[in-house]
Length: 367
Image 1: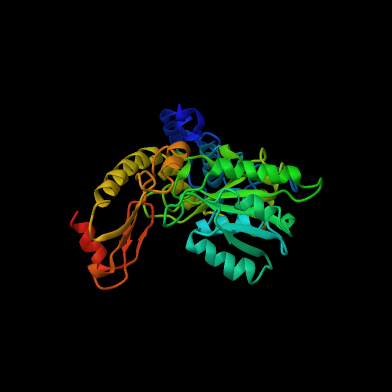
Image 2: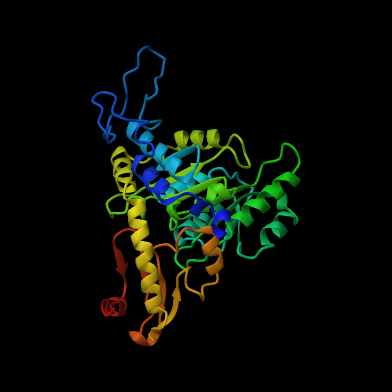
């Protein structure tokens, strides 16, 4: 059956719900009073038994009990070995990009989140000397062709996003993982390995776990579905050493410690609290999104309706193989004559949405 090839569906719903509630929290349980929910440890420093002998927790930039609980939970949720919790989603993106050195190449899907593209163009390219090439990773032969071309050996990282923000394009993660492994096998001993990164913000681990498809790093904004209540900002990088580079976990730990782009104890607590209802929220929101998408599909005032489980979506079959549901986000494009102006809308992925035109508000209000 199709479920046999879909890791997201092999992970039973009850297992995911249990992970959302219990993952990580016993690791950093309150050792003083036995609190079930990990407390918020606001301390900067922690008492050491002897001079020069650092304990498990020494200084909160390096490690903090509340952040440790959240990071452990996120790593378990995504099926990784280590998670670095960051101050924002873009801080997580930057942390992963710091694995790319000046002069190396970065292949990026051409429909990535606008904030990621801004970071790549204004910082990575302009200031750090990294060559950034935007390609359509949805084309089956593009990645292999670029890596086998002149200077293909300088490609250090492939940056994917699925579903993309905001057009909800899907990428075949299993195919990308297979190609990256093939490229690495062809590289000479001692050469830098090609790394595959996936932005999993819109899907979350509830819908797919990219690390199970051969991905090396997962990045996400926890401000959206993980937090889920529009009351915290954060990001995460989840990594495995079982992929293309065995020492990747240690590298990410070292960069996280050196750069210091950490999530605060309070935001970690809020994200950990929000995670406990992730499965329930994602299930209900996905069901509602599909119903709304189907209802909107025949509306004459809409030029386009994008939702992965609609029959006319280019990634419809891939979604059924790769994801548990179609996700919680719908992208619509209004005809210009609805309001006489070009309209834009933003979905933040939590329990609130903003619309930048009266036309959008009128249209949605009429549903």
